[in-house]
Image 1: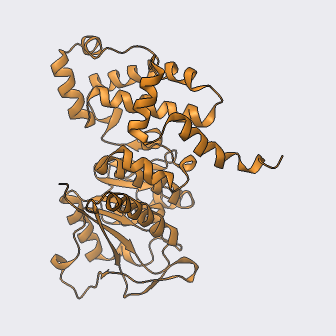
Image 2: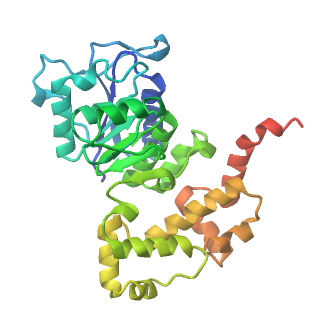
Image 3: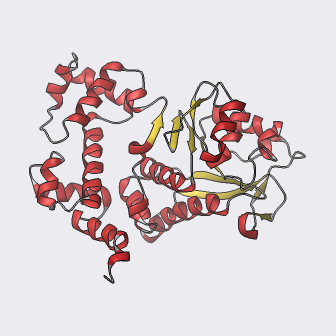
Length: 339
């Protein structure tokens, strides 16, 4: 039985409502999917605030919160979530919370024990003020690029990426990219089928795979193992080819066992799992953005057997390639339906 993870959503007065509500709805949909199968909900969600409840977020909406980070409350009594999502602020991000010393100490303690902290938009200022992003990659809302770089010259600002990852710290440049990040976390913690079903409820055509857009400071091809990085690059360039893992190991100058071990250590998954996800992500993009027949897409993504491709696609995404294309195209081209 999976351990239930505690997910905290940190809000405050003048927070952007969607930066709290969209992640919350995605995670609740994940819970509902488990409950519909008569399984325990995998996530316990709680709202956390810097001010007394209720808080007033953008649009004048009032939101009740479960926990308040009061300076009168002992720090060791503050919530200890496994995942923390910090909302974006409608006004300048340094008004309030980021400069509170107790909040900074709390964030450092959470990071130290491995909490995954996700800063939405200009919430990256919270992590920067706590000193958690020094000499690490980060991004923020585009409006604050210059201000962020001037205030925090030691941070590796990534203007061209909407998501950055530095260990267990994530920054996103917008609410939409935050939704992509939440889907990635659902996938990683509870599997691709649950992630895909959650995505289906929230405009699948607008979700972009995390791996396609994230700058990952300590993962993927930036994990520091040059041999494995070269193998990953070779996989990217030869998706349509037959890739034999034994031959790839030999190409890397390693035994197959050593290659498997080093790849898993660097990437957190086996070479075959990595390759399958690359190919299926490529297939999704072709299904969405081209008129190629499924029979043509399958070999382009390395699958000579179309029926096997369809079976694997359904296993990962809980729908056939044709169903995925229809669900996406129906929404993408609805504007042309009256022509």
